[in-house]
Length: 164
Image (cartoon, rainbow, N blue to C red; front, side, top):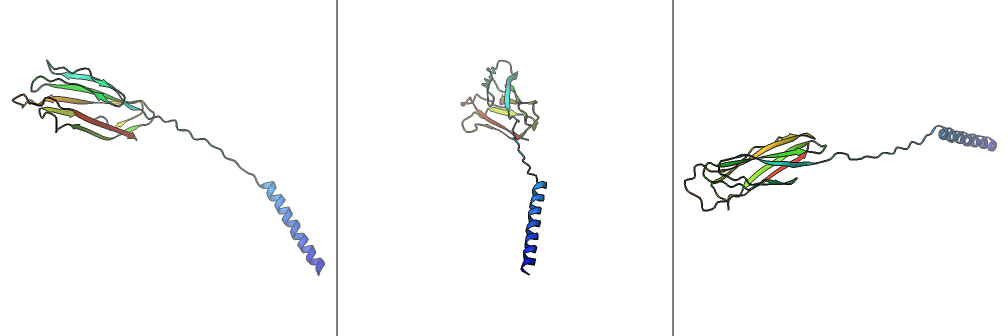
């Protein structure tokens, strides 16, 4: 009886050993390596500011701009005068941009009510490599009947593009 048990145990051990050898012969270890790189570039910026229209006798000044800001200094003479500036925004990156928000806020508290700012909106979307333009117009209110005591008004504009 003991010898039968030994034969069965020995047979089981041999079978297990053969299974282990067979498994290792058919098992393969696979290694996967990868590298991810971001190659997209975000580069939406102001590329030009130019005077589009100046009423006779007015002075549009020399508009200044950087990649992220534009400044102009309009000098208006009489009611009804206005100056229009054309601002160009270009997407020089590789990622499409979409307009998130646009706000133009004139200084109502300290500024002259005789000066009126208006603007058009730039494109909602600027695909990579394309550009859009919009205008800002500053106007001396044509309905003013006397020269105001406060003669200046500033405006703050924010145009925010985000990834599309």
